[in-house]
Amino acid sequence: MSGTENTLIQIVKAIVIFAVILQIVPFILYAERKLLGRFQSRLGPNRVGPRGLLQPVADVLKLVSKEQSVPVTAVPWMMALAPLISIVTAVATLAIIPFGAPGAWGGDFGLYGIDVPIGLLYFFAFGSLAFYGLMLGGWSSGSKFSFLGAMRAAAQLISYEVAIGLSLLGVAMTAGSMSLVDIVQDQSEMWFIVPQFVGFLIFMVAGFAESARPPFDLPEADAEIVSGYNTEYGGMRFGSFFMAEYIEVVIISGIATACFLGGWRGPGPEALGPLWVLAKMSLFVFLFIWIRATLPRLRYDQLMSFGWKILLPLATLNVIVTAVLVVVI
Amino acid sequence: MPEPRWIAPDDVTVVQRGPEPGGVRGAYRTFGETLRGLKTTFARVVEGPVTMEYPEQKTPVYPRFRGRHKLHRFEDSGLEKCVGCSLCVAACPAECIRVVAAENTPEHQISAGERYAAVYEINMTRCIFCGYCEIACPFDAITMGNDYELADYSRSDLIFTKEMLLADPLERTPLRREGE
Image (tube, rainbow over the protein chains, first blue to last red):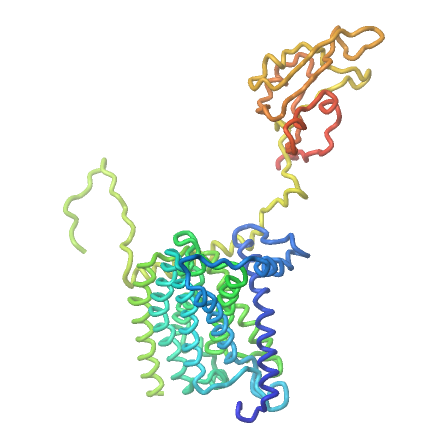
């Protein structure tokens, strides 16, 4: 599809997706704090604006007005670059999440940023790059806690990147394509969550680790290493890391929606696709928050042994079984 | 499964150990426990929050709650019940009450007895709200009220004079109803 689109449409699409997702982030922030409250028998924020709806605005205003401080031991330019890497890679990955069928809203454009034939690889590539942000940020801060957080981020990336790759390989094999649009098109009869249930579970677990969300938030474990890689960050630089983490949540939800829950498919006309995608994504976001409210953080060795001893063999087995089934059927 | 080396007699408590961590069974158990945990947290959402939004909603107190003191007058004559006997001063373990008594005269009748309290001060920074003053008082002139919002900006503002203690408290604290 992308070949037939002119530059203007692509620019408009880029702006729309960027704007929509950046508007979603404050809502996720609000939903997270509100829901965490409910999960803990609390009310959550309710002072700023009606029902506390303006709380994210207040948070962002606070972050914007804060001073940037750079430790003496830090490498300043690298420290400034790290949040940039985080946020750019996070936003870039958004481009491949399909929000609707090609031509669902009339015209010949698709409701997604780009439909690359190697969509999943693109996702892995930027997922890996995103960790450079955490690593560089932690290392260049010149603080022991940041350094520990960075090392944990590196170890976690390597352990779980493999599992997340293998878990989506099953989907790619079943659909016979790596393009997310093709994968959604292929789920017309049955959502992949049914034949690829094990892959779905592995993807979700590894996705939690990939976005460094609790219970896999070891890179920023506040109880042990203050705040990990972003200990020395303040103001909007910290805000960028923070936002990248939430965009990462959106991405994992979006990829899971496209790969396992049939993307834009749902009752009603095809034009409603984006609504279905958003509804399914909010399901996953709810799961992210629910899990955060429930599970305590893993110990470092538990994280490693879980990734290598449980997830990786399971994912490999899933790939092999899927491969056999694809060939046989 | 290996044979137990000895059968535990009745007076020996066999320690029940948890299953060994790790391995496939450990992962399976973890999965089950995770689901149980998710159920636990979701039950909190169903129950709803238990928050008291404090400045707007106040926690109701029990009838015997010992809050800010009150001095009383006779309802019919309007005379003060306190006769300045200083028994509360003697009973007070924190030594926060100061009473200076003066004689009633027929033209200047303040209390029902022979004497009245010309000065009656309670230093709320020292008071420990033990309620001994209430017990010591032979005329029920001083009782403990319900109010617990006693913060102020300076210590001198926390020395409550007789006028303050006699006046009806401005902020009324809700009283807990029967069975609440």
